[in-house]
Amino acid sequence: MKKRIFAAIMATVMIVCALSAFTSCSSEPTDIEGLRERFVYLIEESKELNVIFFGNGLPVYRRDDPLTEKKMIYFNDSLGNYDRLMENSEYVSIDHIKIAAEEIYSKDYLSEVYESAFDGIMTGELSAYVRFYDDGEYLCQHVSLYDFTLEERIYDYSTMRVVEPYSSDYVNVVIDSYSLKNNVRCEVELSFVFENGNWYLDSPTY
Image 1: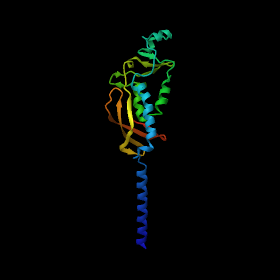
Image 2: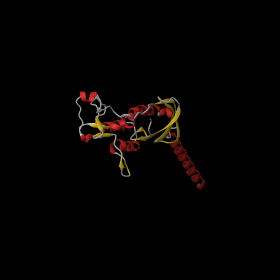
Image 3: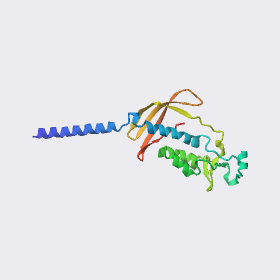
Image 4: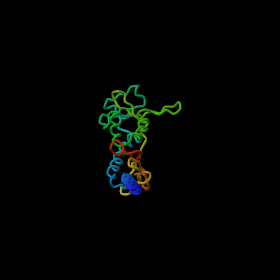
């Protein structure tokens, strides 16, 4: 009788272990096909944000531009080294930029981006400028961005594949890519995290 009870217990344990292993393995996204559409969408949508956060920013009324005078745009000393964004800009406030960014990127990634874009970074006794400044009436952009260019990166999505490490809520992929300036192909590794019921980019794509 004891042998039968022991055998039954062991059989139950083996079944539970097998089911646990199956559940664990099936939750790991080793197959990219189920994720491809979302990942491609995130990468493509991030290109506009790359220009905003890391490129030459948004269109502004430059102080040395005849259009600025024609539009009768005036600057006061309180703006310092910041120019006003044009009224036809898609983004008219910091909140608008954040709404767009938070549809694409993870919270952890954006915490660093927001620091340099909106809050400023302290290094010792030096404080770096913030990229965007809201004076309460207009969204303004720092003048040092005008000569900064960011080459668009082209991705060959047919080469996308999952690489380790990965889990049910974290995925690394590699994709063949090249920039418009440099046609040399190379593998780029990108990270994605699952949070708030969806996947989000957790790394830069520029």
